[in-house]
Image (cartoon, rainbow, N blue to C red):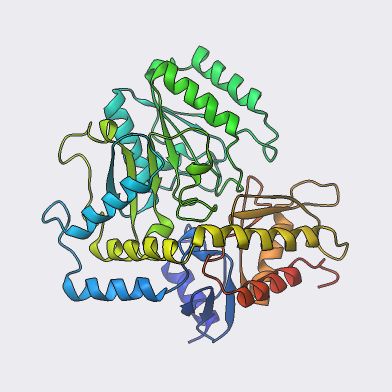
Length: 426
C-alpha cells in the first residue's frame, strides 16, 4: 500500500467536495508526531485543526477510553443516562466563564453546538434573528454555513441558506475595519434591516479561526455587552476552536472583559473523540421543552470518558501556562524569520497563547494566498503538518499540541524555516 495508490482510490471513492490538505495517509501518531503509511515522520503543527491540545493518544485519554469500552459504548443519553455525562456537565458548569447558574448539554460536532446555541437563544428570547461577523466560521451544516462569514468554499454554489442571519464586518487590523466602522454597520443594520428587539443573539469567536486567528477587540465585547443590556440580545461565544487551554486560558472568553451567555465547545474537549457541547445560563438553557435538545450520539460515553481525561491532563500538566511558553517560543522564532531576506516576506504575527498565525505577503506587502499554499506544500515535503487560513488564504496557522516536547517543537520550527525559504533558494 502506498500514498499514491490510496490517492487514486480516494479520488474514485470520495467526492471532490471533501478537501484534504496533504497527499499522504496517516498510519500512526504519538503526541505531536504522525507517521504516514510509507513510514515518514511529520511534526504536527495542525493538531487535527485544534482537536489535539493534549496530543495524539495521550496515555490518560487512552486509558480512560479503554475503561469505558469495557463497560459500555452506547445507550443514548435520552434513553438511559450515565454518570459520566452528568459529571462532565458539572465540571464544565463550574469552569465556564458565565455568570450565574449554568447548564451543559452535549452533542457530537461543533456545528451541532452552534446550531443548538441558536435554538436556545431563540427559544429563550422568543426572537428569530442572529447577527454574526464576516470572517467567522461556525460549521458546515445549513444554519452554521449561513452564520459563517465567508462565501468560498463554505457557501459557494450551495443554494439558499436559512434566513434571519445578518453579518457585520469584524473589526481588526487584518480586515482593515475599525471598531467604529463595525458599530456604524450595526447601527445601519438596526436602522434599515432589522429592529434590535427581533435579534436573539450575537455569535462570535473570541479569536476567529478560519478567518485568520484574529482576536475580538475588547471594545467589540463591551459594545455587544451594552447592546445586550439595552435590547436583551444574548451573546454566544463560539469556542469550538479556541477552547481548552489553547489561548493560555481554559476558555478564550476568559480574556474578554465581559461574560457571554452561551459558550459552544468541541474539538479539543474530546481529545480526538467526537464530542461537542453547549454551556449556558440556566434561564436560557431551560427555555426548551424536554425532547427539544439532544442527539443519538450526543455525549457519547466513550468521548465523555476521554473529555474527563483531557480536563485532568490540562490541570495536572499545567497546559494553560504551557500554551504561553509555547506561544512565546513560536513568536520569537517567527519574529526572527520575518527579519531574513532569504525567507518569504512575513507580517502580521498574532494570536494569544499558542494560537499563533502570521501572514505570507508579496513584495508589495499584500496578502499572498498562492505563496502561502506553496509554503504549506513545502512544509509537508519537509515533514511538517501546517495549514493556512484567513480571508485570502494567506495566513499560516499553528495549533501544535500543548504537550509537544521541546525537542519536537524545535524540529518543527526548523522544518517551517525550510518551508519559508524563497523558492529560488529552496
